[in-house]
Image (cartoon, rainbow, N blue to C red; front, top):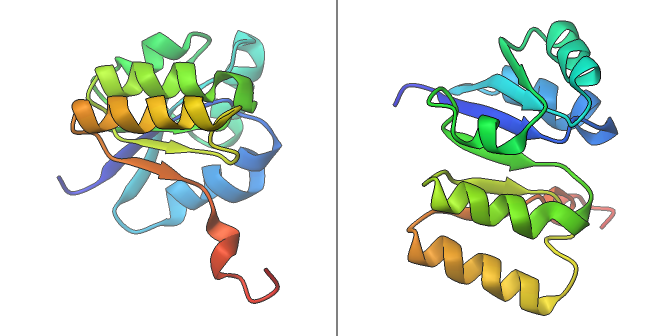
Amino acid sequence: MNKIRWGIIGCGDVTEIKSGPGFQKAVGSELVAVMRRNSKLSEDYAYRHKVPKWFDCADTLINDHDVDTVYIATPPSSHKEYTLAAAVAGKPVYVEKPMALNYNECVEMVQVCKEKNVPLFVAYYRRACPDF
């Protein structure tokens, strides 16, 4: 694989300046699809960030053959649902913090990803920042 082709579920503020542009700028990385429940906002995001595909359904993005890895940037209440769906589809998951609503959800997410042999990462990027 020459490039990791990312799909973002949840195109809110965190993806506007941090993650979305980062996926486009990182060597070996490409943002190929975005999803937001509001199709007009999803289309607008894709247009502004030059992303070729946009969806208003997470399952469609997760099951798109052009998406290799799924970044979940929704509110924490849906992190577990989307993580499990991506794992079942065989796609690595990068999920925003907090990982889930509670410990039990985290354990289930880890277990399903292990069962499906799918990597699971949490966006704790600040742990490497000196101020934190």
